[in-house]
Length: 225
Image (cartoon, rainbow, N blue to C red; front, side, top):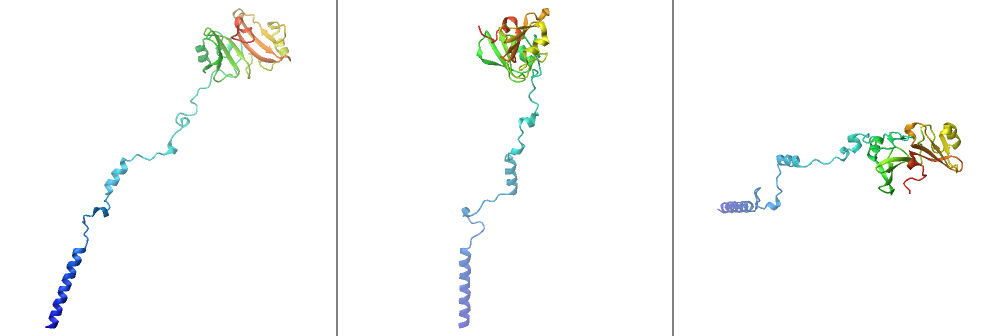
């Protein structure tokens, strides 16, 4: 009888223990969502990735030279290899309008800081070192070479000597009374109103040269008076 009671008592204790453990356990569907990380499906990840903008590849950005090539600027037609004649300088002629001169030279002409609407000097943005163009009433009347390698058609530029020029042109050259300039006087009918003039230093070396119409080219400095 005593053993029977002991077995019953043990069974009751076991049942109570099982009930207590079942009441205290947490299920996988517990409502405490703050302790549960949201589940992200692989399909959602794929959609998110496809909507994102691709990262910028800095190495793939092209420079202007890479995209269009390095020859995007056309070289000027007027260059240092052009020469002074009674007609003008290379493709630019005395008598051209400013627009015509720029088209002929293949380069923009920039106005000098001094001058006026009546008389203004312009210099090419590139292509002819030391060249300047005197414009009167919207027309080129004179071209000056104050520096650089440009010479006359016969090859006499800055640094040439008075004796060499006089020997080359003979009677067509007139020397100033002060001996500080030489003037080429053409004999052809079409050029009689034109002159080419070389300015000289005390040693008889050319310091500058110019060409233009007689009325505008004789003065050492243009756009004055």
